[in-house]
Image 1 (cartoon, helix red, strand yellow):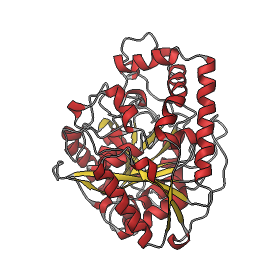
Image 2 (spheres, one colour):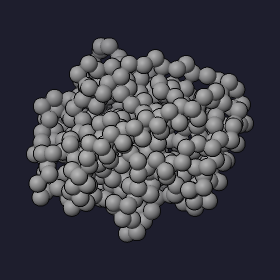
Image 3 (cartoon, helix red, strand yellow):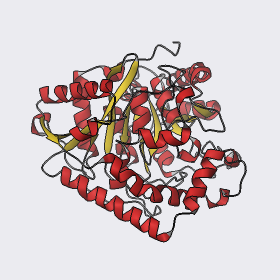
Image 4 (tube, helix red, strand yellow):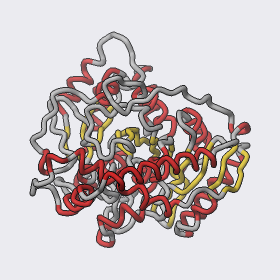
Length: 447
């Protein structure tokens, strides 16, 4: 029962109890923690109590009885929401965030909160008041970020799903470097009320899980308009299609920025999609490097705005204070230019999608780097080359494993039009039914 979907089915059929699943998950959390440092808070008493209560007769939600984890920027009532920043260690939530409330309403059991890059502004998950997260495929390497703990937790088999957030690639980068599947939804599709923001006009919340089927299951639970969340948006989901009816644009000019092993794996994934019946169209998309600097004032300016209470707090790490200081210098003109640049990215990507159902690109330009060889500030710039455009454009994207570079996983991503999560997930499901990359497990974490 590796996948979330398999666990849901097993509980529903009475082959395993929620209590048993939660016990196994808590033991797995303890087993992998020394090697990965993927968790910040573990909730054994509450999780076991909720698991036991779910065994009583009553309405059966779509996630009833399955153990999950959430990134430590989502409020969980009675638990600190630190964002892995020392200044927020005593910030105890009074109520559940919108995402956690929906997960619980669907019957999921929160067993732990996951480690992350401090305040979500970083791609290594090494800047954290809890210490850095390690990649279970090679514990000398980063898991990417900022949802590094969620990616490591799923890859290590502690839970089948952990919630993440994605502002510039923070779901898709850990998915690509940890060998799991991650869904970044349309901007505003999932309410982030009760979650620490990074850059609210780019922020999205979604699952990291074993399979695309798992991601879709969770997305259906957490999606929905929230009148109490200012960035919440209405939309009509695009219908699913059979692979034979799907046209995919392959962003060939993006491949030039990736390592050869990544290009090879993504090209082989394209061949699999073609064998399923998809029509592939080579495409020259926008220059992903050219748009990055243009939208940076939005990223740093909103970040400084959201955390203005921490500007003079010495408990914030030096790299994060530096990013706040950069954001404090952003002028109104800079910010307006950045917002305009983001709109241009959106229009250009929507133009690329005209007559197509999805765009195929690498998830990350290279496999997970060694911890000792990354610079925490520049890594966010280097690694987000393929992921940031979808955030600037507000478009959904799913990242999924497509192969290996030596012993390290490699991911691809499919980017779609607004509200195409169902279509993207169904396409990734078809790919995963034809391959087994998503079911590979890392040898670095003992069983």
